[in-house]
Amino acid sequence: MRNCIMADIRRVQKKRSFLICLAIEAALLVLAGLLAYAVPLPISMTGSEKGGTAPSMEIYIMIAFFFYPLFVGIPIFSAIYSDDFKSRSMQTAIGFGITRRKLIWARFFEVLILALETAVLFTAIVYAVDLWTGISFGDATDMILKQVWIKDFEIIGFLSISLIIVYGTQKPGSGMVLYILLLMGVFSALITLADMIPFFSRNHIKISEYVPSGVVSTMQKAIFGDDPGKAVIAGLCFTVFYILLPVILSIRIFEKKELDF
Image 1 (tube, rainbow, N blue to C red):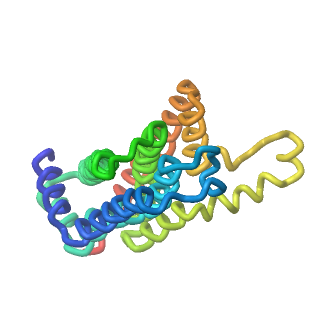
Image 2 (cartoon, rainbow, N blue to C red; image 1 turned 180 degrees about the vertical axis):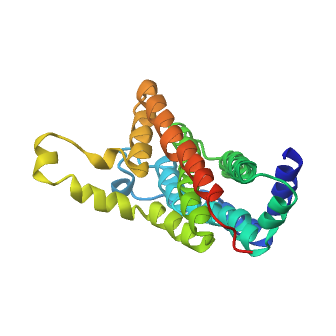
């Protein structure tokens, strides 16, 4: 199975759409560095009494990272899951004796490896922009790099949740729609409305804190607020309930489905 995983990863790494999306995100990061160097934002926009390039760099790069889950998650999803069904390689693998359980875990590990590779790549790009522009933005660098890995963690979780739809319906397009809706925070916004129900508000119950984006938000606040204990707990909860559990559920569902050959 390891050879199968590595072969598929090499295929994805050479895929034109994947490389183009990474190049676009990299270009946005470089552009953010150049804009911060050439066009520092006004003090009122940076929220800093001193103003300067560091806060500008933080704001520009955060805008660039807004597109990160789209330019990373969607190409990975398309290259692994959509191509798997489109090319019938999944049916071929099962026909040669690879169990459905092993197949889903293999595809999950491919997502994990590719997501981690992109996080390392963009971490290096952030440092390269720092050195190239000569900007010293101190704490902003730490914040930006934390944001890279948090976004990557979120991508892995949302892709894992989408697997339930992918393998339940055998229609990757439906899974991609779910992934995009999760990124847009549609479900989180709807559940936030449920927090306003009198019973929940009176008892200070916030259901929105327990949905995927809510758990990520809690973890993010804890990381930036220097509360490692809370960050670890939130990270473990997200890993168990929104990464591992969806993969296991996907396996159970897929094992009972008839393949559409």
